[in-house]
Length: 248
Image (cartoon, rainbow, N blue to C red; front, side, top):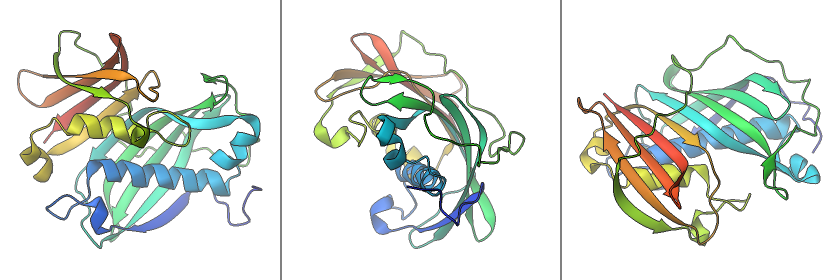
């Protein structure tokens, strides 16, 4: 698709929170928060001519490599949220994108994401084949107080669950969708902590893709002062994903 005449380097998009996206308390699920952020990023790439549809002409797609989310509050059912997004950096096969969620003009979520261009046939990163010079970059305009980082993994973590990848876990790129990793891990968190919105921030590292019928193990550990929980997902003892949760 060509670049939209309505294209701007900073995109704002409104979303209404519906009941399917909420926990029993009526507040947005952390997984659906990530979905909304990802859909906003996709909307910006679409109007900018670098969407999945555009990139598939060259057998390419954006895949998420790292993500940090900082949360001061969660929206609730029927709230209309405004998500703003812009690009901090974009070169060759890599891009850093910022996102913010606002309710009634107040920022409640900040997010920093790191994306890679992925060849969906060769299953490896490569340089973006489409022009992107029309995107103004904002390297100093940050959405989070801290940037994403490499999560330190404790290899002596407790194994808490074994799982097989099913068709329902896959996305359009034919690998496990990034939100699914988060969902699998959060299923092993004390529900009271989720319902009480005790997550202050979380960070995710995506290292290796998972495919249909892969068998994985989910591991968990918590620091001594119980302010941080770390999860990892392994396949054949190799780490594919890491999640770090920071509690309020």
